[in-house]
Length: 478
Image (cartoon, rainbow, N blue to C red; front, side, top):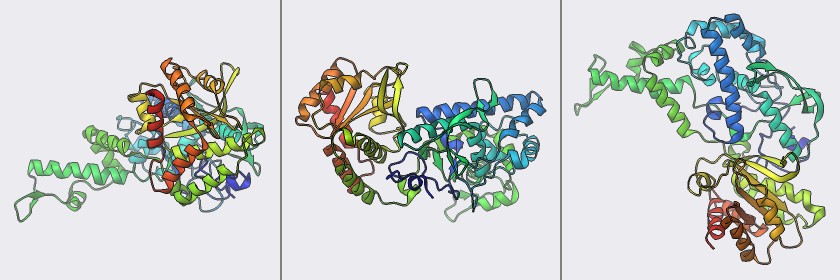
């Protein structure tokens, strides 16, 4: 049963930031560290730092000859049955390293010489150069190392969707980069059928089909060798009828470059620039899976459903919680994958103030990217305040949101409310705040949300882009 059904969230995958897992069977998705490493949102950057800390600690011990300590680090990579992702065909059981073949992995690392020679640069490179390591095991390693980040993410999502958790549950081991050691603790955990469950942000999962040794070999290594043999006019070079030279990949595979991870290790040691080109290609081509890829649903159907759902929420105090959840779901649908990881009622100033919702800015293009690069507005986090009022929002609400801004947290916010008697007057209030240097606020009424949902129904791949760009101009340039 999926999480959304089990806890009657009245929300689907398009409205949820985490993968809506079925706790009885694994989904064939993976936490890919190659993908995680190129994302620039706060959560991903923080998790990636922990991955790099583990990897560098392992490499330092290995190259210093402290083999027992290096080997010992692998003993904590146990089956991550909590995430319900991977390749198991029945009840999730994981296919991790530590509990099955940690010693075999360690011997493979020694045999390959890829760590010793510096060919392996990151955890994800194990998949390219170490025999016996593929996407499922790299994903499992990643989950174990960043387990605490995932637990904290799960806690935030459970609070957002009012999912009950169990106090003082055993976390399982995770890597603490502050002390460069494995650690365990008691945490507030989601527990289902006496089994801890950990959510994974949908923005960082993939099918792990790009960062593969086969892709590196066929697209980069062999194509480099084709050009190299033509340049050197070796016996492998043939000529077409028009006289142009060519070298077939089949001849390279048969005579000079038979595929193996050992060959890739040796080749990369001689040609690190080719490996760098491969990594740059991965970074430039990285993109989060769409909701329709995760769920199989239809954007048009979901947008129509969200319009009806919003219209059914009553204004006023009694409907405040429902409006809050519906607004989060609509923003998730409209802004994903550029704005992710919502946290409800985040505390600032040592708990003296609360912000309704805080998102991470993960945009690599578009409006939320331009906030940083062109509009010079700090926006690593996106603040959202939800006002389910029966009256019009006014200066106190504008001042409340602007009071949450800072250079460290960001100075961009969204003010959500039901309707405005005079939108131009509210935009002018936001302009006053902007001209005073206190930050940027975008007021959004129900009618605006419906306008963006209609753009999704019309097939616009970025339904929020025109609205936010236009509303920003009106706030900044009255």
